[in-house]
Length: 250
Image (tube, rainbow, N blue to C red; front, side):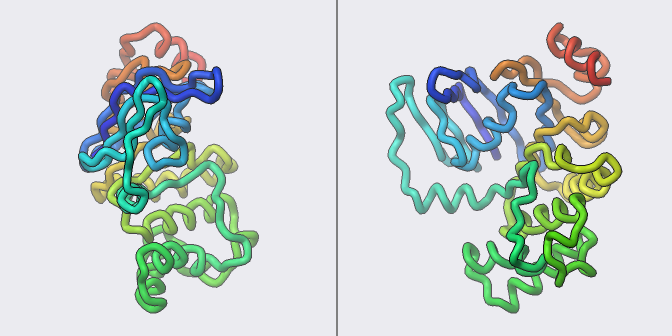
């Protein structure tokens, strides 16, 4: 469902992604771990055009959505088609990015009304189902400021799911939460994985990666250093840099 080939990304003279090659299959959960500044978030943002790659190719569902050669020349895409493809990717950020002047219900309904063109009644029915999924139907009329961080992040997940994406991208979704609130977000993510949702997750939650991931990617300094099963990554990493990183955090 995701194919990344020979991707590089630079900001001016700073090269943040270096020759990235990765595939994610339908129904697979892939967790990306690594130190801060290793390019993990930039990689995620490059999948849905929040960042444009410097060179390489990105495919979503076997459709090319970004391509540049080493000279920076870009493949000509239909903006409408790219937007349609990228709408198949739901994304949840570190910060919740909810609209503070809208209720929980209105936040979840917004994208399905604006992008999917659902009627108000259809969007409301869809939103209620999703709020039930994340355990927040009792908060539907509240404003974000009245919610805990964990509750806000669960609303953000419901909002992303309202687009009915085929793939969910999570960019360190628990890093801004108090430790006691992390579990409630991870529980929602585990339930999505159990339902067969294809997920690419940047995370510092090693317990989640061990339990839920099909494969774990370790990145450092803009490169993929190692890709393996959770068991092998955490019990018998093949690369010295992976061993060094894990020894410091486990």
